[in-house]
Length: 371
Image 1 (cartoon, helix red, strand yellow):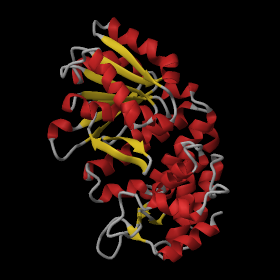
Image 2 (tube, rainbow, N blue to C red):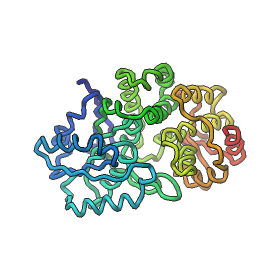
Image 3 (cartoon, rainbow, N blue to C red):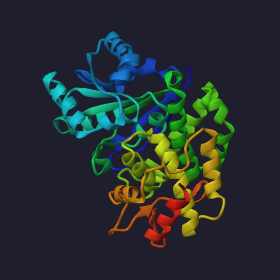
């Protein structure tokens, strides 16, 4: 077993910095890492019911086998269950189990479990320690890193939440063997985003490796996870509270989140982000912040993973705009987008912001072009 460790420095407090451990088979290190980096009187393992069936018993046995106390708490799988209602049910269950402030939470699963369990940890008894054990590609390279936790509400995704940094992240790429191909491809959308915002060579390599990644070849998967983790960690270290440069990680997400909510979460998050990447790349060209070629580069990369690149039929402009108006990047009522100037380099506005304002006319024309 070989592993790579990427440290995420947290500037606001040195003790809040943490490691992301990446490698095949590293899940075996969980009990030792808990004892060393997240000591607690007891551990609440939170997972959706599908992940609980696959890995819950093994994780509990490993923790308890090391002489530590642990209990499994589950919720129904699905983005639509990342809600205030599920947060309340889990919080009440922890209270009933008498988990104290000297306890800790283990978020086991994909992005939904990580966001939801992280938000429970951020708010339970005014905050308890937690760790992230992602089981999907998307969670390993994106959702589990950065300390953003939260739930979805009718007005949009992740509009209620908190920043709460994990004690560590343990990404065992061997767990991706059980991940359905469609979920693997959806995770690749976030990897493509990382390449387009920060590393053109990595983006090109993801295109070359598409067949190998989708076939779950270990070297290709480990290479993608390690590079994406490093990119996200570097961005998060510069801006832990998303007040500046961290906004570049939202490329593809303004429209992607609108597509998700507008379709009732019928699409996987990565599929919606893929559409957002394709549309926002075209928007960047229309606004003149990117030259010709960015949109073709993005759509070609996404197509290699079989990801969608056009807006779903029946999704109206009015529905999309209503969702985008709730986006957290907006200022003074204007819609703003994080857009690349070219593959590997993000655009900045004239006032130095990492987002660019888009007029309604240009946005509407771009939406029509992408149907």
